[in-house]
Image 1: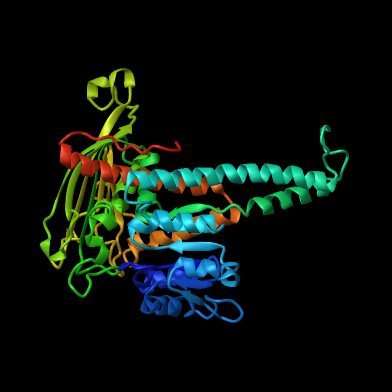
Image 2: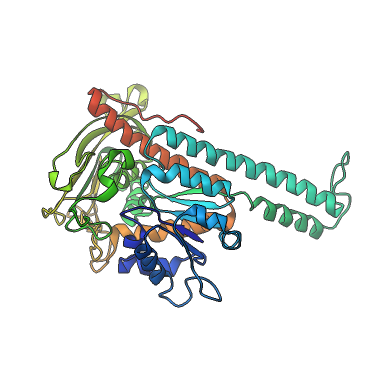
Length: 449
């Protein structure tokens, strides 16, 4: 794998420095690290120490991890580039599109850190690139299969059937076709929140009717940089490139707040119809150009079939009526915050509710969730009290999913991660537009649907 880390304050250098994430990386590593790209030798040193720390993580037989200042240098080294089949990109948001496309054009599969991109235009471009890869993979596989059959005598132009050849010959032809199709790269966006264990369990319980029909949902992302274990403030007390709207695409909503937008979609099983919201700048110590606080109403298409029009939950004749969720994001510099009492999510149904606790962003935070319904009127803890990791355990599920997508050469699954990530950005940008217009705004992103 080729890891790429140009000019980024928050890179996997800091993320993987968490003992928990280091453990998860070593347990779920899917390939060898062949090269590191970053203009900072300190960041390269930190990553190398992590991937080589478990004894066989880096380099291969000679344990050599090649180092470069940027991706261009790596690609210009034909011998090293040939070793690299996958590029993991963790860079400032404004560099996502250009670096991802450069790697894909070089034939490398890309795993891209969220967000997909900071603008609708860049998101559209990357969605189209991903859609073209899906199409190319299908065409390549079909052509390769036909060529392999012709080569093995299974099929001749103008003939039908397999010409009486052995089934094993057909299997060999198929294997050859699949091997050729694997030469088509993929674009995968790494967003861990769908694999956040609390979110996944809440979705399962909601789908099973544990709280009846959902009537309201709320997500609240809040964090003080005094507690942040992956970024923290820089030497000047700011957030580096994250302070720049041009680089980040906005403030807290398009950054950490995205991890709270996706779970609302996941748990409720619906997409965002429209949003109305506001943003503000209330933490001057962070010196951010983008917002540090946001509140929004998110209208989601949610069908409630158990209740009729008289209840006000469903529409006339049981027609679909949108569910309006609330969303807030709040970032502070050094002030302590009430994580022990204020939940990250609260989903209320006609027969109970589920609360996801607000302690999940700490390395040793247990996180957790509680279920309230007639069976558990006082609430039932859904996770062990001594559990640690919470939010960050979602990376385990993420990398298992990425590995499976790569093993299966599943271009359609990869493309779905791109479309989902584009939808996240579209919601964030709609909140920004709404703050300016004071109107409901529809998240939209042109391109592949």
